[in-house]
Length: 143
Image (cartoon, rainbow, N blue to C red; front, side, top):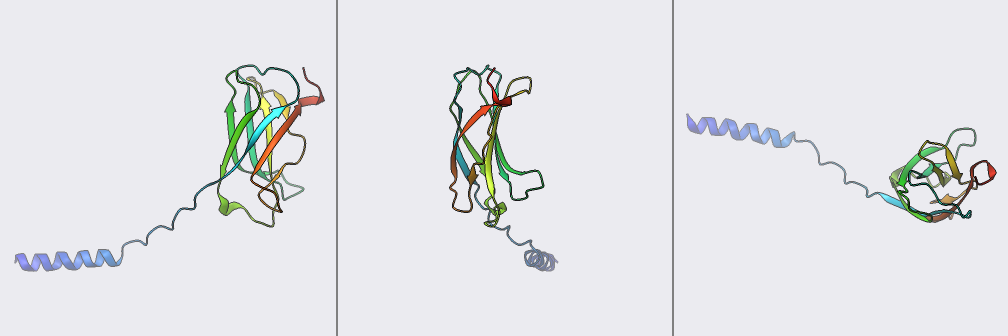
């Protein structure tokens, strides 16, 4: 009786092994876009300001940019320049498309203080994976 039980158990386990799910595909390591954010004005940021840097797909002219990665930096009284490193999934990058880095500095109440006003390409069409951004005062003039 015990032999019969073991044989049934072995057959069941063999069937389990045959129907086991396939191993998951290997994970693709994340890639990184790096650089710094600064501005020219000699104005200190309040301690509650935050720097928001985004990697975006800007390929579609008549559509909002698609965010592929973002880093939010709490300034905590520190001042420019701020280093950033945005991680993204390289499988989402299409060499035919155009990607850029955009940044803004917001005050604690959410109001916009500084913003990038020029195109900063990365990743495709000969652009690298690092860019230093110099922001301008929102509204064109520093307060």
